[in-house]
Length: 249
Ligand code: NAP
Image: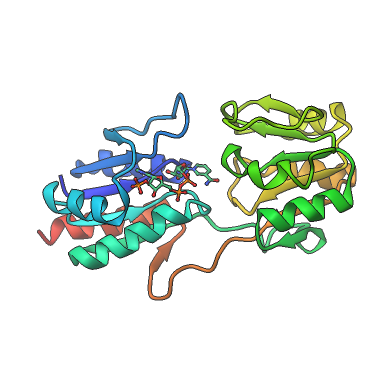
């Protein structure tokens, strides 16, 4: 095995298909957060490595030649660990990250915030019935500021934390269509949409629906990437990079 593909995203699964088709030796890694993850083709390992030192040990013992970090743009802990561990072991690291929505239609009308704490405050100021689409793990930042607000939170798996009594949890998983996004925002009479700058097409229709319905949108900005890190947004470019490493062996 030579390429480690840190996944959990649609782009990572696309890259796995390309590497598999090219006959490359690779293994995908998932965190194990989601109860029924969408599995990529090829070999898959599931679960954390045990921080930077655990990942370093894994890279050495598994004989990894290079790592593609194709985790979600907001999986900042894993990306930081990959950067540190690859530097320590002296192997190549490529970041595969889908483009954000900062240049998308309507982006200038959105309320851009720097974190979930700020998103909670801004959402509470803008609406009385926020629709949260920021993922289960970030809900904790909203339960305090929006304790008495009629929040609808859409998540893939039921959250571990106890949510306030006025909150409603909607369990579902994308990708979504414009018609169903329009319908769910109407059904809950949502008056503010909260999202991360996840980018990509899979969760874009909610942005279109919010624009149509005149609902304000709060968007959590991405952190700036690490300096010097090579980044591509196209799985085909990441495949070419990874295959180049295998050819050089
Ligand atoms: P995170 O906060 O950056 O990572 C926390 C810890 O989870 C890491 O230190 C690592 O544990 C483990 N981990 C994360 N990704 C892993 C992977 N691909 N393989 C093995 N271990 C992994 O990550 P997160 O935001 O919880 O995201 C977890 C996973 O869900 C990621 O794979 C990401 O691509 C996917 N995802 C995240 C989001 C999001 O909004 N954050 C959305 C969609 C999908 P150790 O320190 O023990 O190695």
